[in-house]
Every structure is written in structure tokens, then in C-alpha cells.
Image (tube, rainbow, N blue to C red; front, side):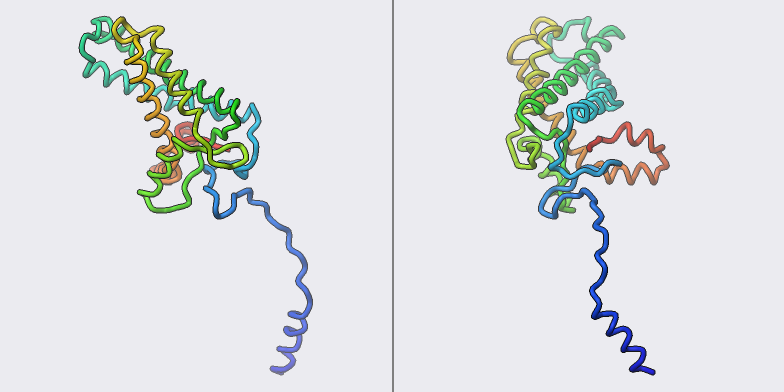
Length: 233
């Protein structure tokens, strides 16, 4: 009986197994960073269409965070206004509206400058997370990605789109900032701030899966989480 039980199994092992269908997960190779969590899984070598680029930028530039961040920055400016800041920019509701509009305009110009430059020089506008689970390494990866991102083909490249977006964000404010704050020095300061914002956005994107898990445990509606957290393709 034992021989009979083994014999069919051995015969079965000698027969080549039928080919199994290969499931294309769309995930990159193990030596590539993992793309952002998204309902549409795409290999990082996928070339984004202009429409996909626009939708990604629109979510970043016109999503809820794009309005909440300027609101907070305007409140900080009102609480501790710069020296020689005009009264109409530091007292009352009208002053808050001016500061909010200025910050919103800065971020919008930075986003549009980033969008245009990335399209022209074939940069991939998506952020790709680190495959390392060490928090310190992930932070370093996010900061490094602010300086060097990826081309459409997946190669490392200087993040010209971040530099161009930061420059646009800094100098566009000269159109509406009050006298004494619409010069080159203040424009460069605003550019540095915007570049830091790009780094903060990468950091936010790097830890977005952790935040998503936390929001799920807190029973935050999926639509709210999707609107707040960064998006990729």
C-alpha cells in the first residue's frame, strides 16, 4: 500500500507542471524604490501622460492641504509679523486675507513651475518611497529625493523641477508683497522656503502609508484620507 501511494506521486512529479499564468503586479524590481500606494499599480518606467501629470499636480496644488498649509502659514505670520511689516498686512481680517493669498500664490506658482519644468525636461513628477524600513534612512531618502529625483526612464537626475518651482514661487511674490518685501533678498528667502516645502512634501509622501494606516484605525473616511494624502500613479 505504501508503494502504491508513492508510485502515483512519483509519476505525477515526473510530469512537467502546466505553465501558470504570470500575474503582472506592475511593481518595480527589488532594486528600485516602491511607488506610492495607489489604486492603479504602475511600473515606475511607465511614462505619465500629460493628463496624468495634470491630475497629479492638481491634487497637490489644489487639494485640501494646498489650502490648509497657507492658512497656517498666514496665521504664523500674523502672530509674529516681520519687522517693518505694514499695518494693513499684520492687523485685522484684511491682513490675514492678504497673507493667506500671498502664501497660496507662492505655493501655486511653485507647483506650476514644478509641473512645467518636469514636463519639459522629462522628469517623473512622482515620489518613489524608500524600500528601507529604517525611519532615519527613509527621512534621508525623502530629503535626497528633493535634490535628485527620477527621469521618465527611471534614472537618477538633478531635480531641476524643484529648483525651478522654488524660484518661481519666490519671485512671483514681488508682484504683490508690500514695499520692502518685494526685493531680490526676500524673493530668495521665499524660494528657500518653497524648496523646504518640496522636501516636506516628500517626507509626507514617504510616510503616507503609515499615516493611512493610522487614519484607518481612527475610522477616518476613505474619501477624506484620499483627499489629504499624496497621490501617485
